[in-house]
Image: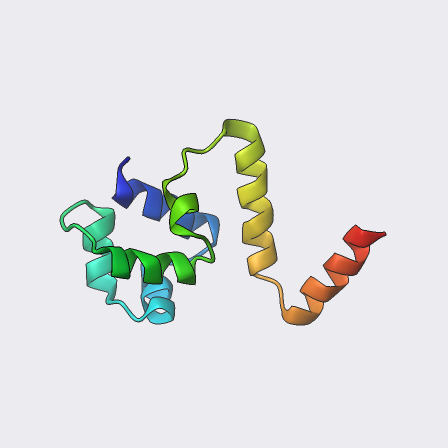
Length: 97
């Protein structure tokens, strides 16, 4: 698996720039970009920080996507992650009906 390409994919799915991901994770923008371009490797601890920021597990990071179903799920997750707490609560109520 190409870690850099996977990181780009997940970051973009969540509508994040490298700068925003850097600010949220505490890692530098230049480091994240170097990882995305496969210029640098990444330690497990740093990858865990990025996964925490992207709200996914290390397992999910390395899991090979299953085409259409996974695409839809990722899109839903990206949409949900952009909601406020109140919006998430309203969505949960709607889904439980």
